[in-house]
Length: 310
Image 1 (cartoon, one colour):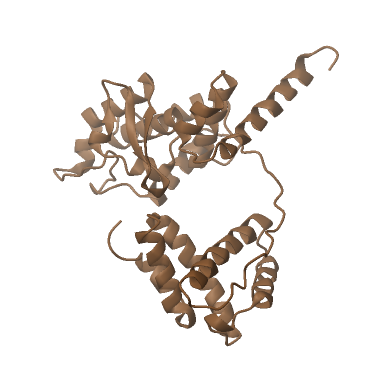
Image 2 (tube, rainbow, N blue to C red):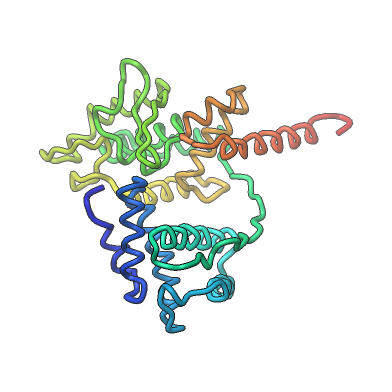
């Protein structure tokens, strides 16, 4: 990730809390090993709070519990939902906990603040028919189509996060053994099995499409853009959204929809929860358990639709 805080995060930080926020982001990068995307998200949240504090003429030591409560109310006033407000509160808790530990403040103003109640939402996913329809969209006669087909197949076959897939390097994939090495959140490494169909799509892309995209350039990354550089998250989101529209899916497509579909389809076919947890890279099995609710809900729908006395 490099030795500095992402430039975008630095640009977002207001001057009033600039030094403590930068110290906090450095701590997250150096000691916690957080990714650039995580640092940017924390920087964005803290920049908004710093602007709020600046309007009140408050420095770090002057911020109290009332200020934080008023800030959270202002987020609701801007139309944010409970989940987003809860995320902002988590950011502030971590920041003030760090500031207290480092002796920057005498007391933690965010301590004991309760998170807003979040209505539990089950993740939506694609049906197997919709997955098949999506996979049929890329044109295998073009380098871009070969690359896109390989990416879609790989995401659905492994349940990887999009950032993990785009960070894959050529030597991370073990074709002969049927697995890949994935670096997930917190730089944690895991091995993920890959099916023959996805491996075949990746092999064909590497054999017939990647060199044409590279245009005599070199790159350690598996998936590259038309300029020969590493394909970015925004670029992939646009590609995926276009294929979702083309396939006329009933839900708005996102990388996490494929991740949800991967987990749900595995559990529907008898995979155990612990195995799915390991493949998804969840540190806590409670995170994975939400998919069991999806499967149970689906079974209830099937029962009601088909049982004569349902």
